[in-house]
Image (cartoon, rainbow, N blue to C red; front, side):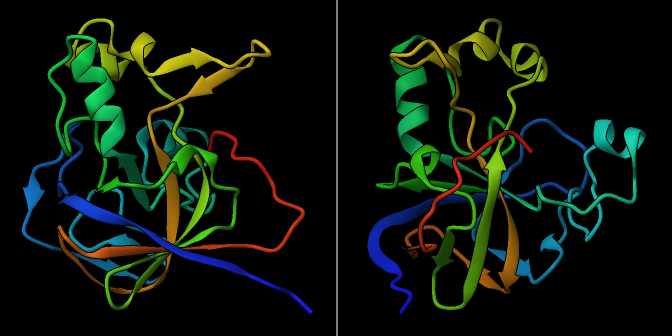
Length: 187
């Protein structure tokens, strides 16, 4: 018998999208997630990869980065370090609160609001564009754990498995896959 752990612990604090390849994404009143594609009207929407660097390497690879999620707690941490960062500023589509996104295993499903479901595929690898937004930001979203391993704190990536509208204030239900869990790696 497979047991899934389901816990409602979080909330959507902001949603953002951009139909152009911009680093920051403007906040919206709502976004629509489309199964297998991503955020409707976002430049990164698609079944195959839409991030420029990845398209240059192999445009036929699957898009494991359809929806980018960042925890509001990271924004708070960065503000405490002197950075001016808010929802959508570092390119995320969904800003969350109350969930340790970085601790989730691959394959975790996040139910966003009434209908939308995303499946966590991996970590965002912080890039130099962060320093273009604010000097020193790339280093600020990297850390080391007690064993000296690199910790990437710039959010997680996911694919859309069930479409629906997502709004600030929507609850987030976390469904963790059965063990053994696979830790998140950059995608």
